[in-house]
Amino acid sequence: MAKIVILGGSFGGLTTAFELKRRLGGKAEITLLCDVDEFVFVPSLPWVSMGWRRPEDITLSLDKILKPKGIKFIHEEAVGVDADASKVIAKTEEIPYDYLVIATGPALVFSAVPGLGPEDGHTECIFTLEQALRTRKAWDRFLENPGPIVIGSVQGVSCFGPTYEYAFEVDAELRKRKIRHKVPITFVTSEPYIGHFGMSGLKNSRRIMEDEFADRDINFIANQAVDEFTAEEARLKDGTKLPFRLAMFAPPMSGVKAVFHLGNPKGFIPVDGNYRHREYKNIFSVGVAMAIAPPEQTPVPTGVPKTGYMTEEMAKYAAMSIADEIEGKPLSGTGPIGAICIMDMGNKAAIMKAKPMLPPRQEAELKAGIIYKWMKQGFEKYYLWKIKRGLTNLP
Ligand SMILES: Cc1cc2nc3c(=O)[nH]c(=O)nc-3n(C[C@H](O)[C@H](O)[C@H](O)COP(=O)(O)OP(=O)(O)OC[C@H]3O[C@@H](n4cnc5c(N)ncnc54)[C@H](O)[C@@H]3O)c2cc1C
Image 1: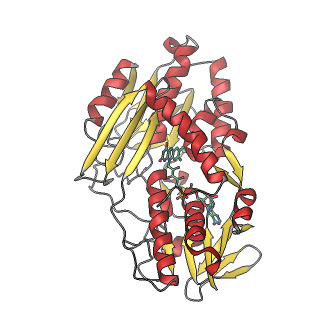
Image 2 (image 1 turned 45 degrees about the vertical axis):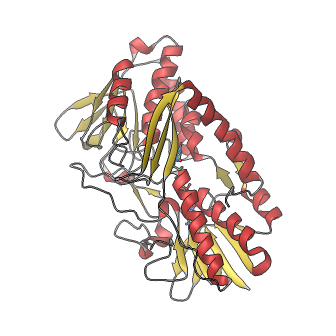
C-alpha cells in the first residue's frame, strides 16, 4: 500500500489529506505530521489581536478531526527530509514515504530589519496565535495610555492583507471607544502603491484603498523600506522618523528550516503545474511553502501572497495528481489558480476576486460593504464546521 506523508496541519495539509482519503480510501496509508496539535483558523488572528475572538473560537484538535477519517496524526516537528532516501526525519523517528506533501507554510524572517518583531524587537505581529495574543495584551496596555500607532509591511513582505485589516480594525475600535482623536495612525508599506497587495493591484484597488484611508484619516507612506525600529520609533529609509506607542509590522517570509534545502534561495519549494517538486518526482508542495515568482519587480522588494483559497486549490490539484498516479490513471491536469478573499475593514469588509490570481486576468472584482463583513463572519463558522467533518467541498 502506498505510504503518503503530509507535513503541516493547516489549510494545505488538511485539504490534501482529506482529498487523498476521499479519492483513494484504503488504497493508501496517509500520515500527517504537524509540530502543533491544533488547526488554527489563521484568517481570524487579527480578530484575536483585537479581543474580538478567543483562541478556543478558532482552533480545533487535529487528532480529533483526523482520527475518524482514518488518517494517522503524529504530533511532532519534522526536522529534515532526506529526499534521496524518501524519508522524513522527525524529532524522535524517521518516517519513510512513497509520496511526500510539503505544506509547512512560512518561517517568519524578523531578522530582515533591526528591531523588527515581538521576540527580539519592538514591534508586534499577528501572524501566529501566540503573536496575536501578545498583540492583544499590547493593545490593552495601549488603550490605557493612547498615542501614535504605526502599522505596516517591511521590505520583502508577501502577505499584505492582514496588515490592512489590522489598520482598519484599530480605526474602527478607536472610534467605537470615542478616542480616535487621540491616536494618529500611520500605515507604511513596501508596496509601490496602496492597494497593490503584492499582486499588481486588483481593478481600482488603489483608488478604493486610498479613499478609505482618507475617509478614516489614516496617513500612509507607500514604496518605502524601513531601516530599523527602536523602542520608540520606526526609522524609514528616506530618513522619516515615526514615533509610536504601538507598532504592528508584517515580516518577510521564507521556507521552514526542515525543507529549506529542497527549495529556492528563500527556501520555497519550486514546483511544476501539478505542484510536484521540479527535481524529486515523489515530492509535492502546496500553499505558502511552495514558490511563486513575482509578476513584476517592484522598486522596494515585495513577494506574491498565497491565500487560503489558493492553498486549497493547490491541495486539490496535488491530491488529484498523486491519486491518479497511484491508481495508474493519466494525470487529470490542473487549471489556473484564482484567489477569492474577504478583507475585514473593521466596520465593513471588502470582497476580492481574481482569476487567475496574477494579471492579465479573465475576471477581477473588488467591492466593499457591510454584507461582506457578515459573509466573512459566516465563512469562519462554515470553514470550521467543514474542516471538523473532514469535508473538502471539492468535485
Ligand atoms: C494573519 C493572517 C490572516 C490571513 N487572512 C486570510 C484571509 O482572510 N483569507 C485568505 O484566503 N487567506 C488569508 N491568509 C492566508 C492564509 O492564512 C494562508 O494562505 C494559509 O494559512 C496557508 O496555509 P498553509 O497550509 O500553506 O500554511 P500554514 O497555514 O502556515 O500552515 C503550516 C502548517 O505547518 C506546520 N509546520 C510548520 N513547520 C513544520 C515542521 N517542521 N514540521 C511539522 N509541521 C510544521 C505549522 O504548524 C502549520 O500547522 C491570512 C494569513 C495571515 C497570516
